[in-house]
Amino acid sequence: MKRLPRNTLYAAVIVVFLISFCSMLYYGKETFYVEKKLSSQQIYDYHFALITEEVGNDYWRLIENGAKEEAAKHNVYLEYIGPRKSDNEEKLQTFDRMISAKVDGIITQGIGGERFKALVHKAVERGIEVITVDTDVPHSERQVYVGTDNYQAGYLAGQALINDTEGEVHVGVVIGLLDALNQQDRLKGFNDAIAEEKRIHLADVKESNITEIGAAEAAYSLLKEHPQINALVGTSALDGMGIVQGIEEIHLTVEPYVLAFDILPQTLELIDQDKIDATITQYPAQMGKLAVRHMVDLQTGRQVEQLQFTETGIIRNKDISNGEIIKKGDES
Image (tube, rainbow, N blue to C red):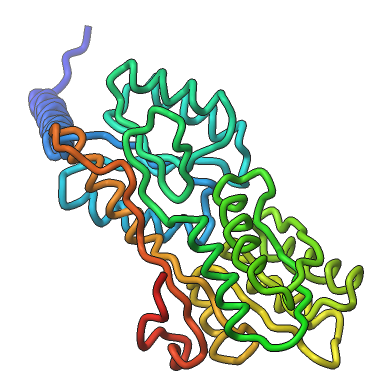
C-alpha cells in the first residue's frame, strides 16, 4: 500500500483538528447562548388571565393597556385572551381553559346564565380568584367587580337627553348586544330616567352587535321605520360612530340629536365636528388598572370592597378641543 507523503498527512491532521476546534467553539457558544437565554427569562410572582369580550376591540384594548401597565408594577404575567368576535360560548370555554391552566387569577367580563356562575364556583373551589370587569354578575361567587355602574350610566344618558333637548322627542336606541348584562342595565337606567319626562318617548331599540357597521345599519333602520325619531342614543363604544354613518346615509333635512357612549378618539372627533352632541364617559384603562391591582390585593390576603365603581360623566362639545378632552364633563 502506498503511503501518503508526510506533509500531506500533517496537513490532514491539522484540518481535522481545526474542524473539531471550530465545532467545539460553535456548539459551546450555542449552548452558552441557550443557557443564557433560559437564565434571563423573567420569573413572575403571579399569572393572571384577562378574558376580553373580543380581541381587537378598541374599548377592550384600553382595558388591556391599563391592566398591563399595572401588571408591570407588580411583576405579574398578564395573559390577554378571548374571541376575535364576541361569542359567549367561546368566552366560557376560555374561562374553563384558564381554570384548567391553574392561573392565579381570572379577570373577565361577566356573562349572564348559570354556566358562568358554575365556572366562577369551579374557579373559587380550586383557589383561583375571580374579578369581573366592565360587566358584573352580582349573584355569582366573584370576589370583586371593577367597572361602571351601568344602571347609573344609562340613567345619566337619559338625564343628558332631557337636559339637552326641548319639545317632543322620539328616541331610537342602538344597543350593543341585547343579551349583554351591562347593555341591559344601561337601557333600564335610560328608560327609568326618561320615564320621568312625558315629552320623551322611546320609539324602538335595535342591536348593533358591537360593530360600527352594525350600528350604522341599526340607525338607518330606526330612521326608516320610525320617521318621527329625532334623537338617537348608542349604549356601546362603537355605536356613536355607526349612528353618524346611518344618519349620513339616509340624507335627513334635520339631523337628530345624537348621544354616544365612551370616549374613543373617533367619537371625540365627531363631537368636535358637531356630529355627536354628547357622550357618556367611561374610563376603561382605569378599569384594567384597578382590576389587576385588586387581584394582587386578593392574592396577598388584603380585604377588597366587592363593588369598585369607576367614574362616569358626560362630555359635550365645550369639553373638547381638536379632538382632545380639555376638561372632564359633568360626573354622575
